[in-house]
Length: 456
Ligand SMILES: Cc1ncc(COP(=O)(O)O)c(C=O)c1O
Image 1 (cartoon, rainbow, N blue to C red):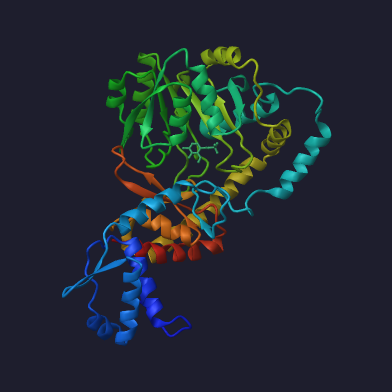
Image 2: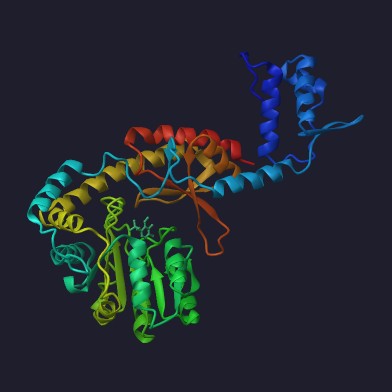
């Protein structure tokens, strides 16, 4: 249906523009256009208006005229535009300012406790010695606080000796990949999963073995068959499916590692942000098995901009770490480490987590309601209740390329991800953390208007 209205734009131009958009964005190759007479009747237009619109489309090659038969959409236009658009999409501009950016792992600027942080930071600046080199592995006081927190909140069993302070998840993975290089050259990785892991391990020279995700988490039989001696998992909330590995399979996974003298990398990236139930205790803490390398981050509950993460190494790997990385310092500046130490020590971290849970739960509910109201039955929510995003799966046929391009034109950004082991199912990560509460419904309203245009 075309929308033609009285405006300063002549009717024939309005009609021409709308037909042209359809031809560019939908696969209409070879389709017959309404005859001039029918178009006049249907839209109550004069013959001259329709003829002028068709003539313009014909002149530009969008349609062809077949004598006695009518006008038809020319071949290859949709295909060529699609190619061109996917090229445009690949040349992403990271600095592009979006009206609504549904990035699944960021916060609106009002969330970070700026006043408190600057007070603590000032204290640290005036009391720290900036003339000396810091501890390579990370400040000892900060590591003590991390160890205490992990023990009390995540049931991780460790001492500060085992903790390495890193500057974000990719740094954590880079260190782990290098520590284990002499031990194995193959890693099993959850499929679907977080692509950063694959990229880092590939760069360090590992072979990647994708291991499927079942409703019980990573497929243990496939893992056994893969003969790998290292596996990366997100046991509390699998990324992206949200599956939690049940206790029976956690024990089996650990037994696999003990029996095969293998290691498990546990990525506990978002356990602080669980809205419907208490976070599941860590895999690392089960039997103090020394087979799990635990990784965590301050990105999810505090700030992704600070770039602070940490690893808990089994004692036998600590020696290897110290040998390999004896030249290297933690990438996190000492003032950030010491401010975070104070933040945890004085009880602000625990309070902050509670506050984040309440705030994010509210945003999560608003987003869920907006999705249900405006996208209705055209999507199914496939992951919710934790983190900073809701995952939706189309229940209708969607042209994902067209959707993304139309959204880009309207300054809206979404993040499709694969959701099944065969990588056929594409779902969309709808971040809510990045919006203020009052922005959530308008964001979904704007998104939904474009969404329906991409339904095939
Ligand atoms: C699966 C997973 N692991 C780890 C992280 C943490 O990343 P970083 O510490 O680099 O912010 C994220 C962030 O979104 C994630 O999705």
